[in-house]
Image (cartoon, rainbow, N blue to C red; front, top):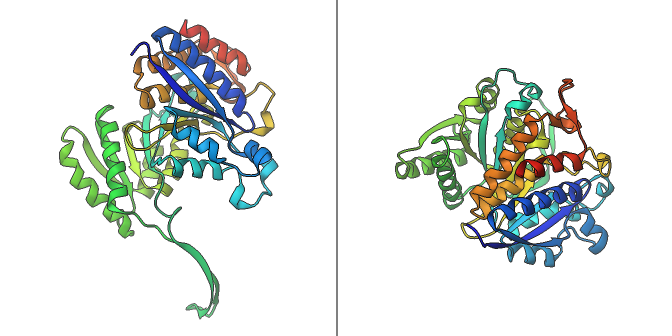
Length: 368
């Protein structure tokens, strides 16, 4: 769609964040030129840099500006500099605050194994891995009732219980319905296979997930729905990763499985993500890797995950699929040409090891 202009909230964050977000912005501008798309970038503070300036990780102004934007592009937050900060103001609290404040209830984590990087995968002969994990973001054990207390009760072997800590897994039908419906929609646009991952043989909350999914399924007769227990899914992701299309699951299970699936691709430096809320509201797009403060400013940061996050922003957040296709194809051409940052280098003599700027430049050249 030509002649469109979008307001993008930009949170560069900490560590390598400013470098990789800068690369993504360059690529967005170049791709936008091809399709008559313009961007208004509004740079905001969140994370450690916000703590340094304001004494808190998520200033009200940042959240308000994000909610008023068309989409949010985020780099990375955190680092050892703030490890001793009070837990209530750690940099990572900015992410929770943004998700909650913006109503972002689903996290989309693609795990795509680029053929050019297949040798970097710890799983050999994987086939064509292209998985989309849809993780619920705002419910479950991370947000359930929790606490601790002292108990003088005696266990069967005579041991005193002592301190007891608990965390509660709770989900409502509404929370489950909205994300499972979203996952069906994503599956319909892909290879039409949806896997619900749970622990329904043990957890009552998981049994609710299954019943809701079965109610929704008849509305998507073109999508095949199956179920896997989380422990079995963890094994199957290693044994047959290419057989998965879309996986939908709870907050904690998605947290674990998305990292496992990401590792199959060989490098977290290649993996984008999106956090989405209700249709028509702004989403947040970010690479899954951390702030890597140890390599900040050295030129070793891989910008491709952030560039691919920008492509996800165009596709899922702004409806600009053609521009997203152009960026993704430019990344493939860059890898085909042999360009590698140190994190994705295999040692093959045909590879061309480059820094952040040269990798970005290669993508820009591939866009044309």
